[in-house]
Image 1 (cartoon, helix red, strand yellow):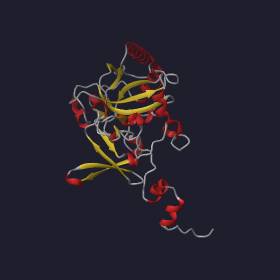
Image 2 (tube, rainbow, N blue to C red):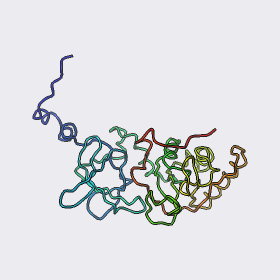
Image 3 (cartoon, rainbow, N blue to C red):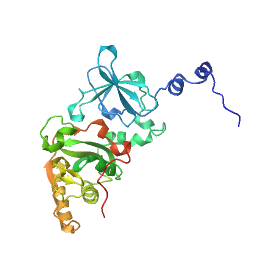
Image 4 (tube, helix red, strand yellow):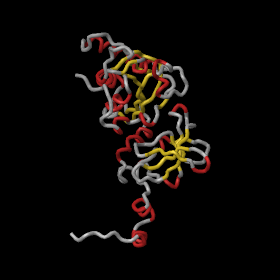
Length: 292
């Protein structure tokens, strides 16, 4: 094979499309960055999102224009995307990723597979379906729980966050020492035609953590690490009560189940660095595994 010689920029500009040239030669981004399911109307006129779609966005201190801001750039292409501000929807984590539309290329949901983004198709399939459902549970550190839950057949999306407390817009430090009353929890969007709420609780939730340790999971101690099922309906409460009775009667645990059943209240998404934590840090701490 003869040695390859890269053409000069003029030749590349002639043979590549403008987008190809921008991505390959000018560090333009071709990474999956944001999803329309996380988009909201901020009233600013800029495309605004509550979170990135994946770990493809980095944050940098920006002191230009006589102010201090947090710039966001694409992780691999190192392209400027926009800025992130702490004035987003409080129920979705409180962040507003204010993005320059020139840095984005919209890919319709029905084109994701064809354009190499098939891994994200399920997220948009959940939006289109009318038979999706949501469950919220807590059982210790949400890092380990999310890592197991995301692989369950029928699970469409996961989000880690805080619920069950009294403080508005809690952050991670607020949950410690019962300061806010919140539990570290996981909100699961799932397809009930594939996975039922009862099956999820019995076959997965009560096996991925020890439900008999009060306000504790492994080395993590405090009410934020309690075992809890947050229910939105009387039917969900009945299912949770039925499963707890079955687990207690099974004899698989030496102590009685300490899992609480609590009404589902306001959901607060955790900070972005907690989302998909064990995918970003494969050797990170976890005390969760599937028991027999």
